[in-house]
Length: 114
Length: 115
Image (cartoon, rainbow over all chains, first blue to last red; front, side, top):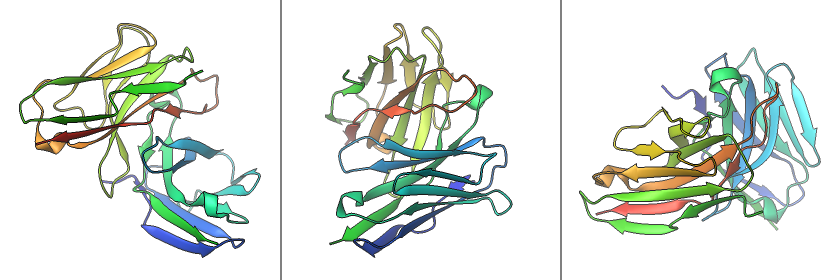
């Protein structure tokens, strides 16, 4: 049973437009949701996170929205840049004994065309 | 700061051989993790450690052992490698929580092929 799902394997957008990456989860006990970015032959790097008690978190061009009733979160990148082309992973975790133990989605390959 | 480093970067094993993957972090983090990533899948947790001398099983621990003899190092061992263990292995570390979630740092990965 996959607790975190990214149903879109890939997304292609034009430079300057908005990129929207989606993620669904099933476990209502998650306390935090995170987005990681991964380039080929490198480890994932942290992008942005959101607590389960919030519905939006913004950091520069990146905004994460959380809809708890729908168990859905999304990452918005505005404006998209060619350097944003990478694999994006949605992940979830908790506090307490679950702290640090990330459950990942399958990833979405984002391609931003100049 | 080197952050999280992994040794080796690549390795090819024959079925039944053993090896140890080394993870080192210089951020004085308490918690360390080993994940594996397979094609079309996200990272899955193998084992983790919440402090020097402690280890615990994650989601996919079978066929692996770990040790955390020093705070800065976390070793992942394969006693008898199988083709199903062909994967990219990532180590990660994070500092303790004080009520919020902190950034988790990942190493560059070890690509392991078992023939």
